[in-house]
Amino acid sequence: MIFSLLTLPAAAEPQRLSPMDRKCQQEPAKDGVRCLEWRAVKIISLAEKNQAKLARALDLLRRALAISPVDLSILSNIAICYSQMGEYKNALNYCDKILKIKPSFVSIKFFKCMLEERLNYPEHECKECYGSVAQYYKDRLKTDDVNYVYAELMLGGPDAERAKKNFLSGFAPGSESFKMWSELLRNFDREKFLRQMLP
Image 1 (cartoon, rainbow, N blue to C red):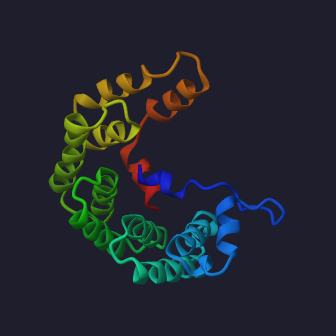
Image 2: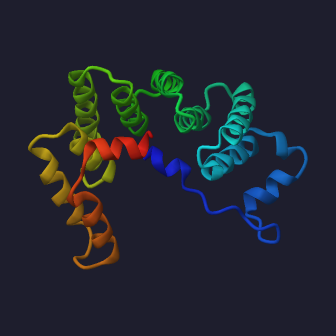
């Protein structure tokens, strides 16, 4: 899902650069779309709500977007950057742009649902949004995906418990993954989850 867009390794030490870091140090690649985006995503992942760093990341992403204006990855990272800055309306605008290009981008649709809820859209609209995400997973994707589980949990209702059990059945009982996900999903609190994802 979208939250995996921010999962980068800790900043590389100078003597242990990643292949992408090495590529982006070379001319002319360093100002290419992927290198601009790579640098921005690294900044976002390490910014810890530092507005100046996030503004720098946003600048890099806008430069990349100027080169490739319909790149879904860049548009997604701009939405994430805005959300990290607390600018939820701007993040929502970028989600809408992405969904106009690719209506089936379900992780962005889920992100949009959370942004709408965080922006105090009417509850029935938010529930309808989560319901459309859950239905998309049921119809076209897998129901053993954690994003489906979260959509069902945010939606509430009778399918939420079944979705949790189905998801957990994919792990060996007692395994570290089973224990971790069991703990995360056991006492799911939708308000807490929303505040964690969009502080």
